[in-house]
Length: 291
Image (cartoon, rainbow, N blue to C red; front, side, top):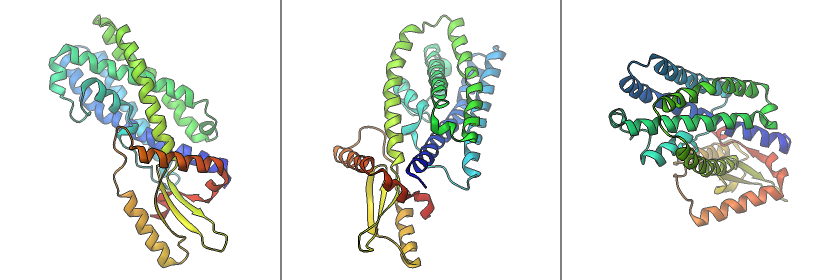
């Protein structure tokens, strides 16, 4: 496999895994939004129906990206809320996780319900712009199935933010001040997500070919060298190395928030090395292939 093909494959794996996580968080979280909308706006059948459609589309998108992996006989990469758009917005606006959000308080307080509608609207508008960018990405366009999936998402996206915008407009909720705040927040969260995704690309087993047959296996996860062993050549050695990989995959993901300085230095060093030696990417394999 060429360097370009290896990068393309990894890019699409990371991209699809991030979308699986976000679409799953989307449709499961919208169950609680529906509860709030039905309680707060019981007579607004069109608004309720629009939120129900939004929930259905999110689940459909989740299933599409999941099947993209299933058709290849692969599992998606493990992604947590550090790559979750709605997770970040909820944390910043409400000061809690999605699971901790008090639905009853949102239903009882008009200002809280307004914030919920605004968070969803701006999150979906951001998602729509992201899809437009991805549909011009050469790696996405190189995969006909992935392109078709994003065309479907592109078609569905406008219906996901318009109902909340309509409710805010009909109820005289001013949007300019919030939009300015969210545009700044969106840039910061987007930069964080891109950084996390870049680190996810540097997750694999790298075979460093020695000059005298002393090859080494480097287990690299999110830009950090987590283990180094002689290359497993025999069945017993391969089984032992699989155990090392399984143990590493069982470790928790990076927590949200700033990374330790020493971790950043190591990540930059690893990224710099592979940038200078792009041909080395041909000697990498996914961690999942060692399970």
